[in-house]
Image 1 (tube, rainbow, N blue to C red):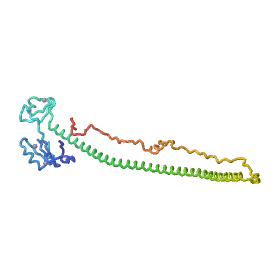
Image 2 (cartoon, helix red, strand yellow):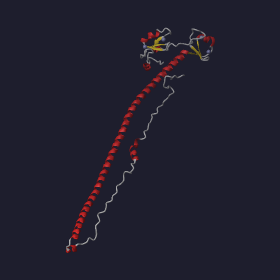
Image 3 (cartoon, rainbow, N blue to C red):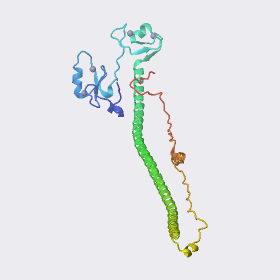
Length: 287
Ligand SMILES: [Zn+2]
Ligand SMILES: [Zn+2]
Ligand SMILES: [Zn+2]
Ligand SMILES: [Zn+2]
């Protein structure tokens, strides 16, 4: 159970043990129960136990001393350091003469003070954890934004790259088309020449056939034989480059994007002392 001063800022953590309403103004010092005004009646109507309802700030101020077993009815307000046992004033005279005795109340009060101090420390620690938790949330949304921007930049870079590739490919297509047209023009020229020669040869053949058919001596005598035949123009050879087997150098692409990799995480190392608390309800320090 958490107990603390009414003035403490931790007070809002305390609830009525019966109805859970915050900042209970009362406390039963014998049952160690926090109580609001509405629940106090219900609590003390449990006659199976003794109750001592006090103001919340007064809780624990009246310690319940251990009962003395040899002297029933007497409370042990002292602790014998030598025998390590609680003793009453009668015990001191009877069997603890000359022993070092300490006040149980003093130890009790000192322990309570320690608890209050620890509670303050824990509260400060809790605030630090709460701050860090909201800081982490802010860091997370910053991270989202930054990484989205990085992704967009990579996509934009990719689009630029695609445009460059498209422009390059279109230029090459135009070049190939011009090359083809030049070849085509040459072939058309040749074809024209070939057709013209073809028709010339056909006319000559027709003329010779007419000569063969005639019996006019002067015409036949005038015929001059063809000394040499002209061959048709030879085939135009060309070879096209084979670019399908060329490898694309993927390292070049990687280089363009390599400047932000690998991603490094840098921690702000603060002094983290775990000596005082460990998280969890079982954090009870014995001293
Ligand atoms: Zn209540
Ligand atoms: Zn009670
Ligand atoms: Zn005694
Ligand atoms: Zn003793």
